[in-house]
Length: 219
Image (cartoon, rainbow, N blue to C red):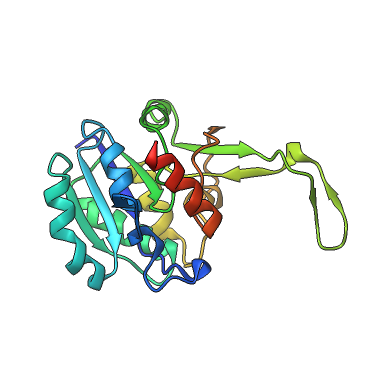
């Protein structure tokens, strides 16, 4: 097996004050995960693993497989933290032995197939491929200290890795609350390959983001 995707869908939606996690909110004709999968080229990945809570797996697993039968969708158990969810999914993938794996937050449904393919291409010659966006805002710290924009990067997903490299990093690292997967490679002294991501690849964390997503979806 060559390419695998891990889609992290264990978030609780607390920041949106939602009764259900934001990735399952119905906006227009589909929820956020369905929108992402409907726009994902099924030829890119040999397998897609969705990290999800058991109660939502029972509710959505059949509909996901029926609607997206061209994708080879499997499910792994999400954890209390993002890192645990990633680790659980990577361990689940051991029996499939992929060469490359992309780890993506389900709250970023607007990533393009073009960028996904770019990540996979970069993994031909790198252990990782991490998209980022340079900050365009004027930024200050709480103590009124100015920060230069060229020193501030917004890290995006999907993050791409050689599968065995990121699996080893997760197994070796005992911390369970890393903000992203690339930081675990850095702890193992592995060089990170970063490249410019996409402005539209936003993470939906607040109501304004949902409004923007709805406008994009309705076009």
